[in-house]
Image (cartoon, rainbow, N blue to C red; front, side):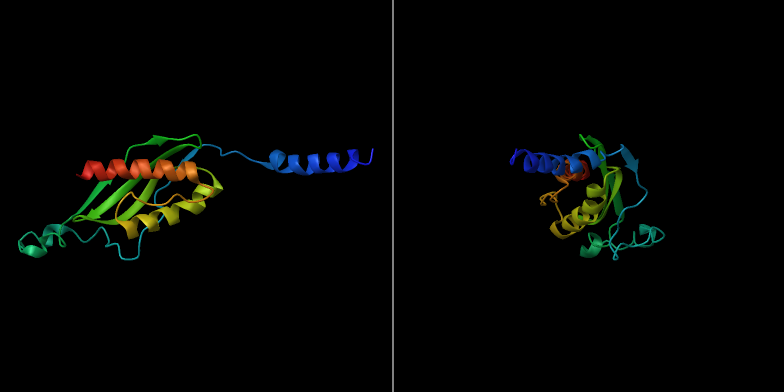
Length: 147
C-alpha cells in the first residue's frame, strides 16, 4: 500500500504531458519566413548590368530562384525556395512547412546555417529533426537543380 500511492502519482504525472500533447494540424504555406538583411530588393534587376562582361560578372550576375522538391515528412510537407546571386546563396525561404511550434522555431536557424555554410551540409535543429531532414533534402534538390 505504501508503494501504490507514489506509483499512482508518478503514473499520472507521466501521462499529463501525453494528454496535453497537440499534434501538428497539417502543413501551412508561408509567403516568406525569413530573408537576410543583405538581400537586394526585387526591384533591382540585372537589366542595368548586361554590358558589364568583366570578371565581376559572377558577382553582378542576376538573381536566380530555384525551388526545391516537396518532401513529405511525418509532420507535414517541407519545401524551400533558394535565391542565388551568381553562385552564392543569397536567401532561402520556406514555401511549405509543418504547422508545428518546433518547426516555426527551427526555420530561422536552418536558414541562417544555410547562408553561413553556403551548402546543404548543415546541422539539424534539436527538437525539429524531422523538419530539419526534410529541409536539407529539399535544399539539396534546389542546389542540384541549380547545377
